[in-house]
Amino acid sequence: MPSSPIDVLSRHLEHVTVADLPTEPLDLPTLAELLDTIPDPRSRRGRRYRLGPLLALSLLAVLGGATSLAKITRFIAGYDPDLRARAGLPGNAPPHRTPLTGLAVDGKTLRGSRTQDGTVHLLAATRHDTQIVVAQRQVEAKSNEIPTFTPLLSGLDLTSVVVTADALHTQQEHPG
Image (tube, rainbow, N blue to C red; front, side, top):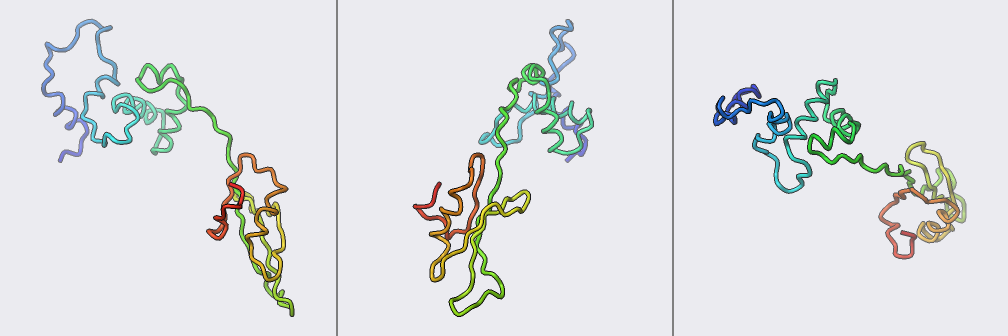
């Protein structure tokens, strides 16, 4: 198998002759159209964009200094919508979504809190990004965390918040 992409491209263009090439500059195919003649090795399922425009914009990103797939993706997303549309990709930039905040709910028994009545068990809601506890409640003795879950979250604004919790909290009466 040849390691040079030029060898691969030349194999696919063997059927093109000099007589086939257009003579007028306006009749010349775009880079995306030329790259679109390359057989697409991707599975049909999950394909969102044609290969040619994707390769053309990826090439521009690499020429612009992108050195990883993540950087290529950021370059392409940042291109002018008209350039994306001319290349054959949707011209509209993806809508900006409201960033989500993660909130972890978990219970812990306080170390060294054993008394005649049992131990102190707390249920807390902690932000994923800052590890700050934003709410905390004591779990009643001889109970579990389930009845404390809803009151713990009731005083919090849960707009744009994703709450993560143990499987114990997959209860129908918990807020969804």
